[in-house]
Length: 110
Image (tube, rainbow, N blue to C red; front, side, top):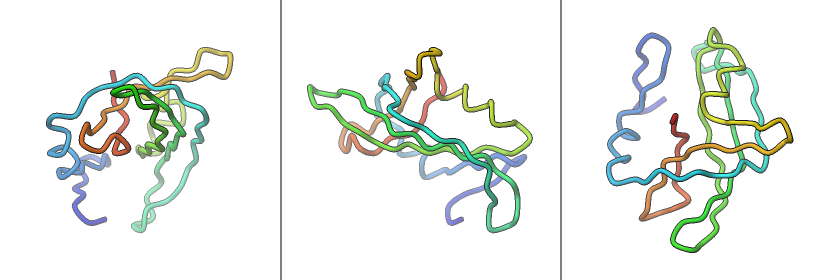
């Protein structure tokens, strides 16, 4: 994985962190999401969360598909750090959005 440094099993992408300067936080509605267990090329187990979300910025509705991974030992339930479900199949999440390109997003832990 180019540009990614692993520290204690958690991937830190320094290029992504640098891009966040000037990004804004928005609350989004998660239309759908899935969580699955997979493997890295180095054969480590990781959970992956991918969501279909929508939010509004500058009067425009944007749909996006943020993704994030985390170590297997944190368990599938760790997705609650990123997606809040209300029990009625409506979920929400906090996203960091690049105002210059609103389709460029990352999950944000609030």
